[in-house]
Image (cartoon, rainbow, N blue to C red):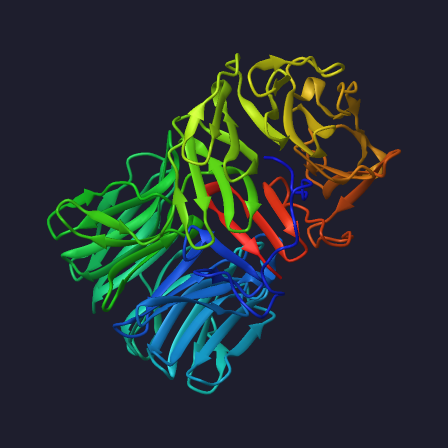
Length: 605
């Protein structure tokens, strides 16, 4: 994760100032961050609905600590558009027509609950409910008969609201977190403690479900209700309620399977989705019922949060990391991934120019951006790649697990013998044939153009790691590192002056209450000999705290703590990463970052 400074070779971005042009082929959010991978978006997606046979709406959550980035994805006339939203959390969508779309969620990452109403060409309307928690679902029988439900997760108090065409009102004695229906006299609300039904005159409870947590519901037809329930013990169920009673239709097989949403068009076409936790991490669970039996489909690349049958599109499920899949019943059940780009974790980023950018990650993933599109490039390895750096488009180095080192000469990657099998974490080169590589051990390697040699890092604890390298010249290079073992936790830096590396300097942070702590320093970046930054992420791994940075002014290190609001901030072009997210900056109007699940973004604001 080479540092985010300008590295001595960078120049101001050739792109015009913000507001005049967007990079070609980008999907850009209101806060200025554009998605290069995955596309059209990589945020957590929680809502999906149709507004006509060619209109698809998907709601996403804001990034943590960046509540202004709430947005909606709108697929219309064959293309994606990112629409602004006043909600940080867009949890559910319902549309009575293509010019009448209702979105519920919350204005912030906690309270209050809010409703965002998009009305044709007119300005959207925002309604905020100070005494209502996060709104989690919305459904309507008509444009003047709409229900919204939600829950305050700090108190587990649920609520229900009704729109009569003029105003929203709280429904006395009725509360839940999911709502569905077939008409004004057939409305169902699912809650932590059961299921409620409205017959047009009064609300009643379903006795068989009293005390049961109903996670999701869908109506195949009047009197034909499909539910996801959690009855405890780590096992979840799909249950069917019809004229003959309540029946368990599907049970998960282990606590590693979590069901989150269900959608039925008939009792021969039911989808249930969720998450599956396995050796490969968290993936999307999906299963289909054809009227005879449930059949499990292959795991989707990302977790799935919500599924809906959308006219003109079929069954669509959305979820983590911009995940969106189109489902087909089969047999066997299958999906088409609507997301473009890799979902592999990305751990390093480098660019010789804004039209020549590299990112690397798990499983030997190497991606290149040429100014128009992101494309995969064979790296010649299946090892997890942790960092990438270079001097030009034909001199790019990547390092990773098991001592992996590969070099790109402008046409292909080729392996370079490192002489070690430890995991390598960082690489930096200021000129061709002069490459520094760091990793576990601590390991510090130097490539002089013909041979790789090992360098002893004086003063570093055994078992620590070199986590990052950065500099502005061949004779001015910094490293940072440390260890995560609590018994000998330490964060350190060292400097190369062109002749030798100085012994490591342990940096100590003053935490809350005057407590002095040392932490691994995951990032280092140098803007000038008297302007060097290191980051320890959040202070006090034992209990959280503000983001911790140290600054070197050429003489001494001083501490700077940044809370999640990002204050205080130095003047551009310094760009602090979001915690330890690998980042790269060409100048005040050209910032790049990569992260887990294939996230690759750029900001030219």
